Image 1 (cartoon, chains in turn cyan, brown):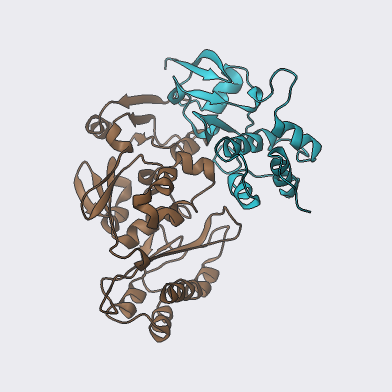
Image 2 (cartoon, each protein chain N blue to C red):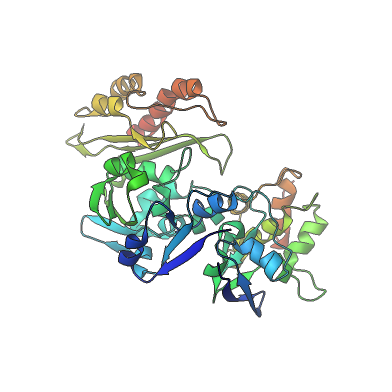
Length: 158
Length: 266
């Protein structure tokens, strides 16, 4: 079975690689292109740890056939920071102790970024909805929701 | 990974390529999940780039939805506002950006909430063999071939359609059960009622007993009580990690009563 060439824009850079038939995008990003920021959690669309933005939309990279992103734009947590300057969401997660073991964090950050890109001042409920596809077994979610609120410059209510 | 990926420009070519060794890849939430799990029951993955698969268009008394239209597109389409509360409760945002209306028709228990609504509203499914009601399609869905479009009738009164999903976690959780009710009324009487349950059988099923109790009646507390008494007729709830068969049987009438009472008051 031959490999298929894939070219895409990953975190603003033109990238290319070869994918095996049936390989998912998560594998392709991690093993093919060396972007280790999206995480493998469940492989079945339950946990959200592999969330990346495809043409701006949050999707589960473990359930995307790698070759279908040819010509598309993919953004991962690996591209959030601008050099040494962390993204506002990353700083807020750090300041608000929104990461404990940290495994869900890349997916949470991308789900949150997708929300803020279209709604810069979301309510608490809108944030809860936006991260409802991402499981966290450490924090109980409240610090994550608080951090996303803080990243938008909104007051965090007790 | 011994898969071959076949991409076709038209649905006609893709439909011809389907077979027992093939699965059609729409949003990926079902097929890629099986690929990741090492499923070896299929070796060919069929795709199509036909724009008809992602189109939504009005057809007079209804709406034609391409099989690869995502649940997010349903939420965002004002023409399909009555189905937005259903689509919004399928998975999380990521799953709604990927999962499709056509794929939902094949979702195994306990998934497939959107199909419950399609069954209640009396949608039709178009495959290479022609058009058939969702009821018939579901009975034989493993041998249906490629689904290209779903025809959704437009309810004359959006208030005649009601939706209730029961899950253990909010805002996202798989269904303990889901219920869609379509209660068109003529002169205060219910005509051509359709009630569908999800997660209460191998695929979405109609509650034939409750339908019979409601047909021709006015929607009031005593009619609702009579329908609730025969809720389980036509359903065969399974035991799974979300709930036992016993529990599902015990609470089905309670949830049907809640939905119908809410519809009576609105």
